[in-house]
Length: 129
Image 1: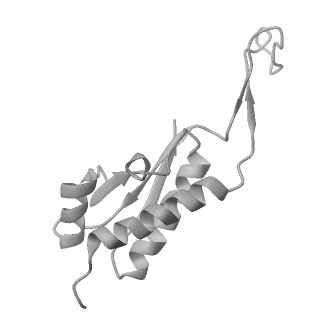
Image 2 (image 1 turned 120 degrees about the horizontal axis):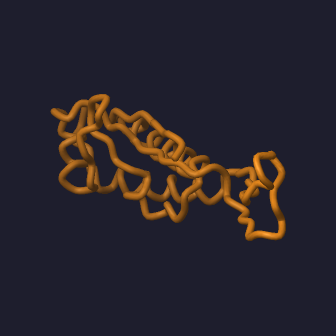
Image 3 (image 1 turned 180 degrees about the horizontal axis):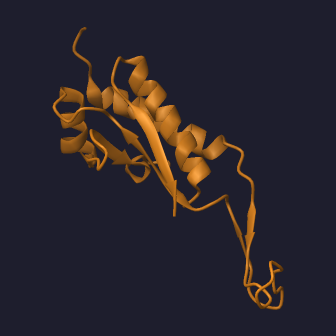
């Protein structure tokens, strides 16, 4: 395989992340204080409309011994993932502007797709907050 320009790949993935993040459909979630122990919202108190559920997403770029993973650690804030490999949070992409796990997952999937198109290892992981 020929030498890959990791910075160029990252820039392409960053754009893909931002496009997916901005354009994914997200179900709005109404959040408020319950009336007693019921499942009804007390509308006399402040309520919020959230852009989907709050959570995290990240791209795992594979084995930390690879040149790709080492570059991500050195240049984009990657870290050793608890479950193995090197991970980079969605917040390291310029398009991440909120807390919506749905948006973060969509962005990370788009970035991972770009990485994979260059033969680079990438998978997406997420969790609710």
